[in-house]
Length: 366
Image (tube, rainbow, N blue to C red; front, side):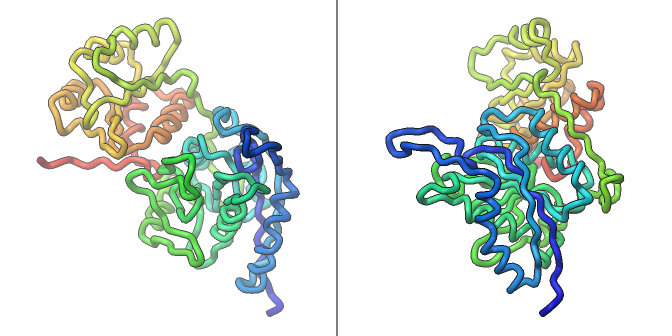
C-alpha cells in the first residue's frame, strides 16, 4: 500500500505523575523526570505499527504547556489548555493531554464545557507509575490514547479520558483509587467503551455524547467557528460537606466575609438538607447566591424527590438539585457560568441543562 492517511497529533504535556512528579522515598531513591522527547520516543514503535496495520501515518508534535503536580492545577491551567487547542486547532487532527491523576476529572470536565462544539478528539490520559519507572503504565496509556485519537471506525470527537482499560466521557471522569492501574471509572453514566487488545466502543453512548457537541453551534470544521468559553471562576465558590450540628451561620459568613458567590453543599440522602440549616439556606436565596445541593452517597442522586427535607427545598425554590452530576462537573460548570457573569436566575436554569451528558433529570416514582 502506497497511500497513507496522515494524522497530525499534538501532545500537550502538563506534568503530573506521568512526567515523574512523585515523591522520593525509600523505594524511589531518585525521581526520574521525563522531557517531551521521552514521550515522542515512546510512541515511535506504535507509530510504525499504525502505519503498517492501519495505513495511518502519524505526525506527532509535543509541547510542554506547564509542568505541575495535578494537585496544584488551577482554573488558569484549564484555560491555558483550552487556549492551546483553540490556537492550534487548524494545525492538528487530534489532541492528547498528558495530565496528573488527582484532578484529571476536573480538567476533563472543564475542557468539555470550554470547547463547546469541538469536532476533533481531545484525549486526556496519565499514569499511576511514571514513565521510566519499573511497572510504569505510562506507555500503555499513552499508546492507547494515540489509538483512540486516530481511530477510524467510529467518529471520535470531544473530550474523553483514556486510562487503563476505560474510555470515559469528559464530564463523568471519577478517580476511585491511588493504587490500581485502572483507577478511573465513569460516574454513574458516561462509559464510552473499553480498550485493551481490541477497542470496544459503545456506539449508542458515543453517538449520544457526540450529539451534545452540535447543540450550541454546528461542529467546528475550522478554528474560526470553534466556540470556546475558556474562563472559570472557582475562587468565589465554597464547597461544603454537611454534618449533624453544622451551623447555618456559615453561609452568611462565607458570603459577607469571603465574597463567596455560589455554594456547593454535599447533603444527606437524596439532597436532604437538615431543617437546622434552613435559616442559612433562606439567606442564600434572599441574597441570590446559587446553592447547588448534591449528596454524600458515593453514587447517589440528589433529586429533592425522596424525602421531606429535599422536597421542602424544591417546593420553596431554595436550591439547585445536582441529580447525578459528579462533584467535578458541578464545580467546573458552576465556575464556568460564574465566569460568564450569568445572573442568579440564569445559573439556576443552566445548571439543570444537560449540556454534555453531565446531568440526568428524571422524575422518581415511588
